Each structure stands twice: as structure tokens, then as C-alpha cells.
Image (cartoon, rainbow, N blue to C red; front, side, top):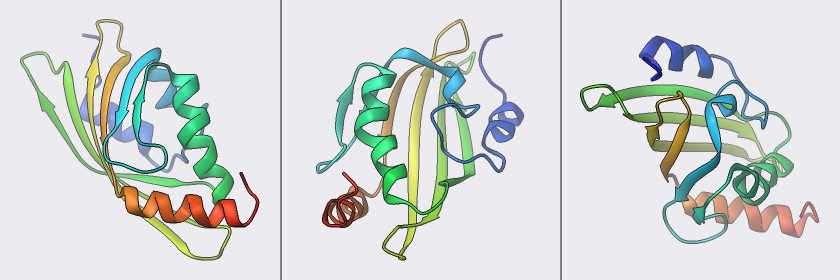
Length: 142
């Protein structure tokens, strides 16, 4: 079966910083359909991984002092063959301004039969992201 088990998902996120080449990203299709819900910087629909990285992940990483540490809080499977997975994640780091970055994410993901994530609905605190973006822009980080 191409879909990940709870144990496999937990291993991917165990003490793994968010980075473009991290273990989770090897399981995301290059042509992923990723929607970040809400309004503000970084929200919207991305139809490929490169666009998502450039407009969200890379900017966030520039605004942080160190790696973004992810912790899986819960994982839920749906459907007879687990084609759909919902994960709750906590993300922590320190911003370059010295303030803490703590955000909670809920990712609703669809997998293809090759074991790649092909669709994501991403829910997070977009007001926090807007604050971080404004801070980073004021510091000349992007």
C-alpha cells in the first residue's frame, strides 16, 4: 500500500526541521495542489512545490534565527485505504527579531497511488504569518 502509516508519519516529523530537502518533502509531488487557507501573505493556491517553497517556506526560514522545529500532535486517517490524512502540527522557532514563533497547523492531505502527497488544504494562524512577514520586511530580510 503506498499510503503512509501513523508510525511512518511520526518518524518523518520526529525532530525534523522544516527544510526544502527534509524527509516529508520527498513525499510531496512536484505538481502538488497546495492551498493555504485564509488571507494575508502566503495564503492562496499553489500548483507546484517550487512556487509554494518560494512564496512561503523560504520566506519563513529567512525570518527565523534557526530551524523551524515541527512536532506532530495528532494524525487522523480517513477512507478505506487512507488516501486522506489529516495532521495537526506545532511549529516553534525564534524569529530574527528575538520573538518566539509558535504556530499550529492542520494539514488535510490526499495521497496518490505512488505514495506522494498530491493535494493539501493547510490551516494555520495567518495573522501570525502576517506579523512575521512585516517584521522581516522591516528588517530588510525580503
